[in-house]
Image (cartoon, each protein chain N blue to C red):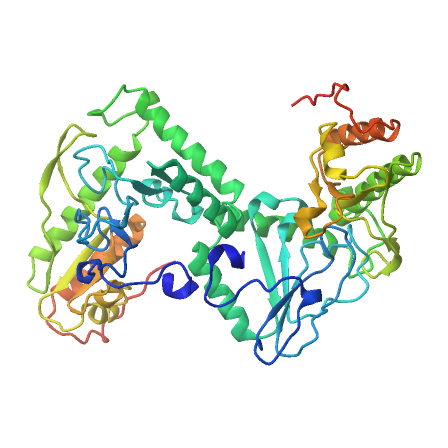
Length: 278
Length: 278
């Protein structure tokens, strides 16, 4: 982004891990994806310096993806409707910011940059959030152990958690049944939102190919579009990212194609004919 | 905008009228508001140079505002739903661009900058445009002399033209009945869309106060919010911009407040009590 806009204000300084805050570069911004994308782990700020600002991106910080272990309490926290309810196309987001001045600057920037989000999208986002908050508020305050809301409706985060848990189980079962792929393990933690011990179910699976040189290429051979490691600044092409929040139909097709690779030791699968109905 | 983003690529070089294209500054962009905002006149590019790019902003280039005298044929033409149908809050716009490479860069910029417009807004915009095009296409090709569409519905541009014509007549009648204000005159021209001679009815009236020093301030004194000349880079505070595309209720209140000023020679109108019902 900084490269693209060619701003006079900031430039891309590379990976935070490698960044040395010296006296000559005494203003930096570190962005913490919290949880991290693509691997879904919780990461913390790493820059060794005190003159910088921190931005925490909490786009995936919802109980269906990661145990909520404590209230989030960072200086600048970004949120989005995208992974909250799946309305990525609304482009609706919000921020919780401690410093009023910073909040005003952010608001001004959005105004100058986009003249504000479409009113249609704002209205829809407000409606969705109001509905979800209303559902849960009928049940008192957290932890929320029941799975149903008023009028026996399904509660959003509970539904999303169950769906992801089921999908991750299916994917793990498939992966352990062969030797071709492995998946990361995630720790258990007590989720204060659900009031029970849960584990991480990222919106993306960070798949490792144990026998093949290039995992994205391998998946491409059976018409699975994934995002290879290189797109996340990672050199090892044995990793690739696949989405877990497809439609159910698409997810079923995804599993069946992965199963074909898992049961085969060929890396060249061009002879397999697979098409998706649209 | 250029000042705000502090881009390395471009900087604000001031009013196009005063700009001298020299060998040391051989890349410039001239933006032509077509028609102009705030005064609604048709303007043409003015920079004396050949190394620059032209962007024509056609946000107000619709037959209800200005006679369409010939097909628009500029290199980069920007359009918006905002003044087309009044859906400014949708933030939906489009461009007609001659150079494919430029179009691709613009598209890429929008993608990086905003990750694209909200899908809700896109769907609504497409629906509105499809409906309007459908209405007119039932009537063959331009000129469109009839005012009704299929099933006796009112055609959008015809309705908007009639509304604006009526409002402008009311405003002009008010202005000529006193000596306090004047309005610009606009030329008649043959509109190829309507197939008749029409005149300009800008979405904004560029009001001049003939007796008072500061027109925006005068209007403020009776609770009319306008945008003073200084906001358009014009030093003379005798001018201010008022909107003609308010709701009918608001427009009626606007006229009644202007009439109070017109019938009074006081500049201090604080004794008048005027409130608007919400």
